Length: 387
Image (cartoon, rainbow, N blue to C red; front, side, top):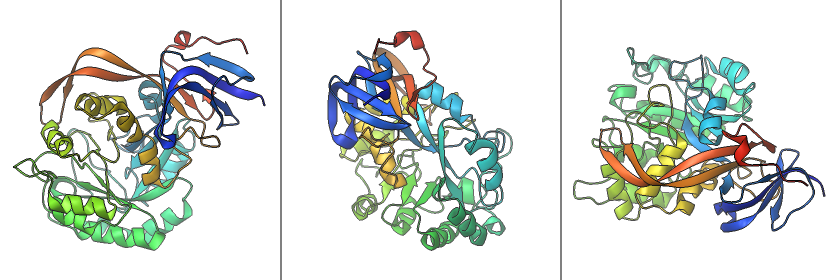
């Protein structure tokens, strides 16, 4: 068999196959076509020895409606910098502006974009440096009928329904927007992702309403509405929700990740299911920066590298209900990320301004996208090898 591309000699970490060791990965026609030792026969071979190869990173919480919302960043540029091959946009667009997002951003993008559709008519339309209007605060903007129609017709890109509740996002509407979004999710048979910020409603109220397979994002947020108690234990409602199958996602962002909360959760053995950056225009220059920086924070706080990779690949793919993502199994999507783990002293900061001096930093060095060697930062690092 002749492959299009072989990555040769890297340390391959693929939690979907419980594999961590040196071998080769091959790609043909946009899919993984080989996974093993000493693969041969390719149009292009890249020597990645000394580097880590993972399935293409999935960032489950991003805002990439570039030009259509004030929060949007460029998904292709984000891929080049942070190794994220699949950006999942979480509610930037609602049924009223989905068509523009699809036509002008998703379809032309080289990097993969999937999306949660916002139950609010125009998605997250009013968040900027000077204007911050919570789209769920005005219930006249809730548009469940059109949301069902748009989600049903766009299942190739739409993976679920998004709603934001909390004082900043929904004012004093409490759980009413969540109730409406759950009706939509039930109607179309999709999972729901729920944002939470300051009360009302409370963390406990929100997770009590979520179904198995639904995602709570901003799960390790600071007080108020933190998942840990003042005594450093995990709230019993949180443990019950995990047992029920609720998925806990980080969604770092500008205001939703705390070292204090994370220390308490990890000390109790409660690791996040999914690590995501919630990268957008207001946090791409800090404190979130990107996916690999968010992953680095968890590595420095004691999560194993394999678990950090799993939370950014296979676990995210399972949340999306797309098992062909986040894996290097033969037949899976032909995406891979080449990483290094640098050692030294690295200053990390959370959303409340606490600094953590870490000794490790995960860095993206290159990307395979849709089976092709795509926009690595420094191509010369990975010389072509004669076939």
